[in-house]
Length: 179
Image (cartoon, rainbow, N blue to C red):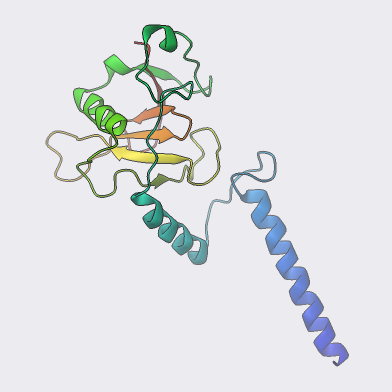
């Protein structure tokens, strides 16, 4: 191998190692809270799209906080604690009736009115607590009079937490099931 080839190989290995370190630091679970990169490459975008399609049919059935799949009792709901005190919370009974319908469908595991219900919510803007990719799933809340899915969603976490957004992910409120 010539010295020029060794130099080229060494630089290639160095660039790949640097790319791996940067990728780790901006990932959801690496870098101890390092900020996520604002832009993504087309390769990672297509990879997440295929991962989203693969998990669409295997969306988890959220459980109430506390890990029990049984319906929450008044005693069980009295211990509800927000997952992120920085997020505002909203009483379940204060949500629109369509949100209650969506929460009922989530509790039953479907069927959902929209094909994209249950897909992975990627939390790209980090408005929800940071979790591993695939942790959150989104569900449409019907918007009366809207010709499409509208802007309202319920996002669930694998630990049973539920979030409400009326403005297509610009803001979130954690749903308090006690009220």
